[in-house]
Length: 305
Image (cartoon, rainbow, N blue to C red; front, side, top):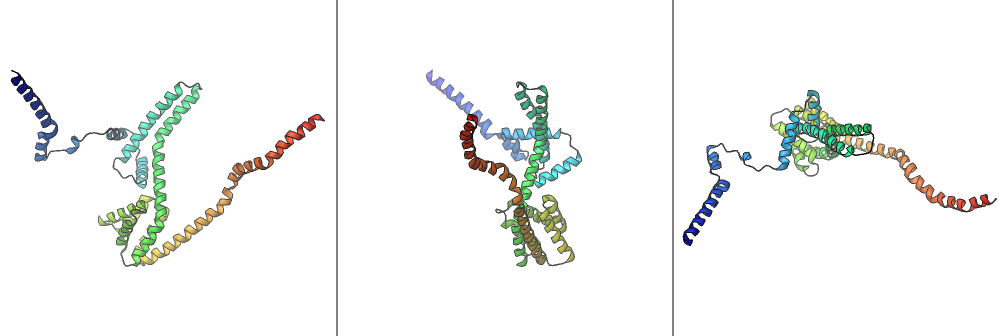
């Protein structure tokens, strides 16, 4: 009897473990789907909470009304910020809607029990609505401005390297590709943009069109000037190396003049910090002891008279 009970328990445990293994690890259904060519690995992947939140924001962005003009401006701003995801615009509008609702609720919860005027509470909630709705736009604008600054900062080095490559005998397309490879770690932003130019050239676009797309995509004034020089050199048949060399000298002179201008403005800008920060402390150090001595000795003498 004990032997029979032991065998039954063993069979039950073994059957349960086998069934669990077949369902959780072997997964014959997935094997059949893989053989049939209908297997979708994304359906069986575990969903992360961040991915669920990302999907929720994207779906929320589908319900936000969008004007064509605003969509064009925001898509251009996202591209200039380096965000090229096809769902970036939907996520942006979803974030605006989510923050525009969540932030006023949080602020309303905090100011509900405050001992302030009802008008101030309403003003705080309305300010939270404005910050929540327009905050993502400002964030994207800051990202775009920062990336444009980095591109303008790396443009002189890339231009010098482009001049060296062209003067050494490379064509303009190969020179752009080489500059993109060399500046991948030093200036990744402008390296990425030159890489896109190379991809557009490989896709069959004309060089003029690819360069114009570069200027429109970045929105940097110095890069637009460089693109204009390259387009004119390609159109009129002048030497590209000579044009790039002249433009590099022009950029050096312009950078020197900008530095001199900033240095000349420094004296005027230092007036307010000196007047409001340095002079009060200087007066306290120099006039303070004399004023204390006058108050301590002269005032009792005058009161005794």
